[in-house]
Length: 133
Image (tube, rainbow, N blue to C red; front, side, top):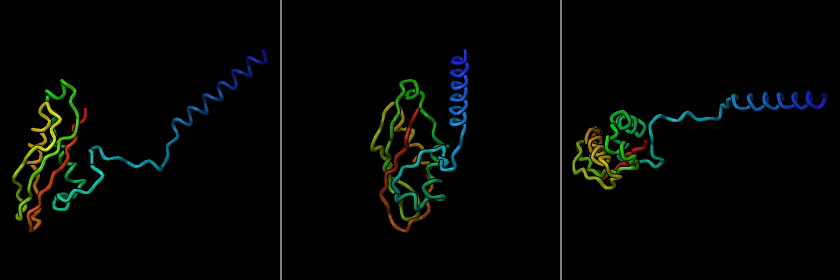
């Protein structure tokens, strides 16, 4: 009888320790943004209001996942190439990498909505737009 009670007490103690370890919070966790930002710095982000974070926040708000891509569970990274002209206008859009199922066309639509400040010189850039289910 004493063995059963001892075993039961040890089991409850173990459960209490494991439950408290799961609920403990650490201050070291970084708060991640809800949108994806690539690690490397893109030259186009220097000329966008809000910088890299502002540009990818705009992209995440405007992105509408294509129905065909949802149905076929297509995900990946579409890369769009374009030119930022001297006055900040954009031209020469083309899809460099297309995961398929309408994702490249959606990325192209979003890239055409981006508004840049005038860099004072022409700049050929390409930006990645990530589609993930």
